[in-house]
Length: 373
Ligand SMILES: *Cc1c(COP(=O)(O)O)cnc(C)c1O
Image (cartoon, rainbow, N blue to C red; front, top):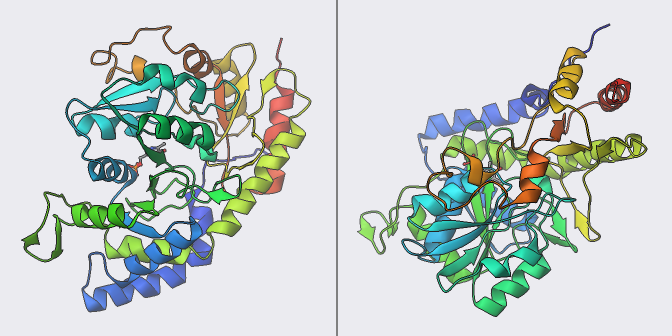
């Protein structure tokens, strides 16, 4: 029998939550309170608690969450912000949109996370913040990042868009820097039914400022205290997220179980580098990324697809080599060798909470059947 294992199957999650969410949707329609109301407040409370943070402010997506965090520090024209070269482009976009310049740092080749040992050499008198990205659901080396930030008086903004619930030495993503930005894009570990995101912080003043900016700089309608914007989330997404918060830990655990099975089953494969998990890290496996040590990635991916296994590449081009950034940042090929090397050999395997164990086993079998030579 031929298999069809999707890279990500969003529909697998609906049966469990559909009715609860539909009920809330009907109430929202009956009340016609469509923007940031009770459901959003409930989500914010649950998410702050889950992330070990004092405050959560829900916003309309992860990119604006990052922008909001930068705006809370008045970062703009002339400022520089440290960002990993290996990340989803939104990390850098948030910096660029505000008129500041993303300054890139290469990754650690084992974890794919920002190499903290390479941050300090990129700091100038214009540097205002560091954005470590908890890529693929694993927290960056936050002790090292925070130490550098403290020494140079920089803000630390976690890009936790892929890391809801991940922990670092017992503390959750969302509480590891000054502010954290989360995305609730449908494909993320905590996904809305549309666009959504959030910021968390333990700092009262930053929280208040971000809440103001999110809603046109006003607490009271038409009384504008600062120049803000409209980053508000709608109530329907608040309802989806409030319901999903009751399951997020169970879903993350299920991802961890699937990841462990991949790690155990593929441990003896010489042709593959498995993702490294440093001591003290508990990832939530937004993605499970392997790296081919040799051979032809295109042929490998075709073998997987031909056998009914969906695979992906996260991400195919490092930021400094994208058509978006290549012309405007002063980098060239070779500047970030670890990111560049990995980008040609990484492959993301199917990973989501509902992915059945027998499918994980089948994916592993299919990898083992590949003719490596
Ligand atoms: C998804 C993501 C973002 C942006 O989130 P959106 O909700 O899509 O705007 C930012 N950074 C990283 C690392 C992401 O994965």
